[in-house]
Image (cartoon, rainbow, N blue to C red):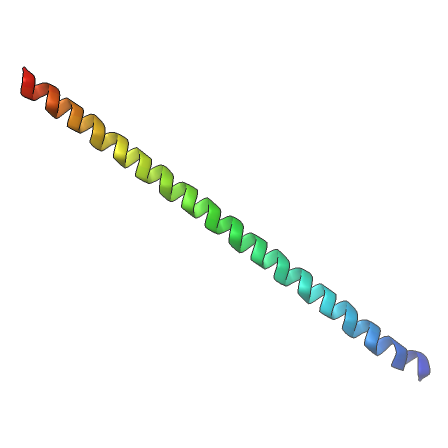
Length: 65
């Protein structure tokens, strides 16, 4: 019974370590997903800005001809 009693704190510590690692991994994945989302959003914004500028330039050129 003595060895079983000694294993309980060890099991708890291992569980705590495992849970801590899972939380850290989750936070890392969440941060990476946020970065990917922001990059994709900025890419879309840049594409839309480029299209608007191209259209504005085309409209400006048309007004001079």
